[in-house]
Image (tube, rainbow, N blue to C red; front, side, top):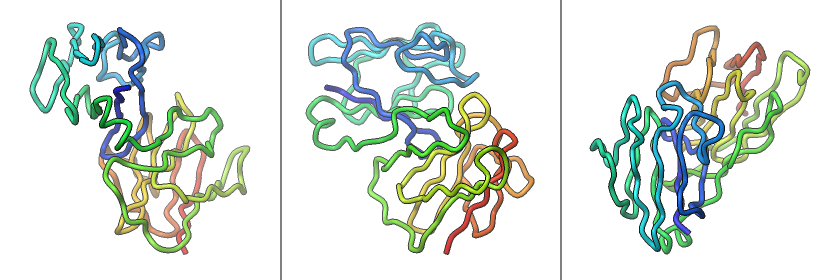
Length: 214
């Protein structure tokens, strides 16, 4: 089946298999693909699957729907097309290619303040950073817990409050916000991924945690 790989700032956050004739995408919770971001309209776009073909249709969204950086109203998707909605990029993998190249990623952010589930990969192969890295919880109900950063992408935080992703790269580890405000060493984190150093302190929704890399 065709698949969509959803990412933001190079961090994969979701994989969706297209199994229905009509798959909706938008900010509202009743959509098949929910992206809870103000840049996404409540009912932003819809994907129509007709036989082996998939068509993407914009539903008169406020900020538009783009395929390979071009605004569209309705267009057939080709393998490896990149859909853009807001700051999110969604790569389309056709049926045969999806089975060969798609890799497992996290399908949802856990509801615990410091979720243990992670996204194990990105689209491009990565060479892992050396050493052992963990996120150590400093405050809140989970104080004292440690989350090992063994996967390529690890999401931390609490949905609806603040969620960020820590990604392991060749040069080391970086952190990028996914939803809500993230504070790094007392300064709000922008939209771009930022390199993490041993001892850096993150704050998400009032919970403080420390990045430890040995």
